[in-house]
Length: 290
Image (cartoon, one colour):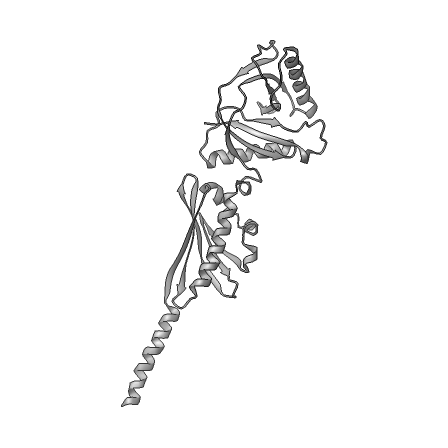
């Protein structure tokens, strides 16, 4: 009789073990990151570039299994050789902060400490990466500030091609001569705006901030401004690099719901005539914003 009792007991034990091995429980981990959802999402969905932020010294790798809106399905190969499959997701928290979440289902007998360590390492690596705006906007750190100058003198001209360096500095030299002739002084780097007004026409405006009010002479105009909010970013490179930087500024504007109130411009920190290596040119791109 007792031997027969062993059979149901064994079945109960085996059933319990199977239940522990097969039954799944939910596991979730979330961190908060200070960035916009649109900017982070561009990095997130560019899975070909994940190696830029993946924690290389963690001993774990990954395999992408599906890409969805703000949701990536993947499997992580942990440092101990085990595999963890789940979903990494982004969600907006505020206008300039997001939630980064990992969600999966785990066996009851899984090792929580190792899983917590692996998931936390991955989430923190992405958080740190997207909080540096240079990783989102092609190496440019955009920042908000206030305008420094209120009185400018300016020259405007049009042409059938993008102005050359020589043409730009010819206008700048004209402004400098005018400023000296009026016993005034330039107080900041020259400013440049180039706008394409039609398929074959470019409008160029150069301006220089001065230390006192000047009236202009018909050809040279006087501009006066009250202090205003500015969006700025430093660029290292030539004309093409600067134009690409303005495209990144547009992304930053949209991501952060900013309105540009007037024409963006370049502040020419480097004298481009004296430096032949365009990779050494430093330009601050600027835009008055609301």
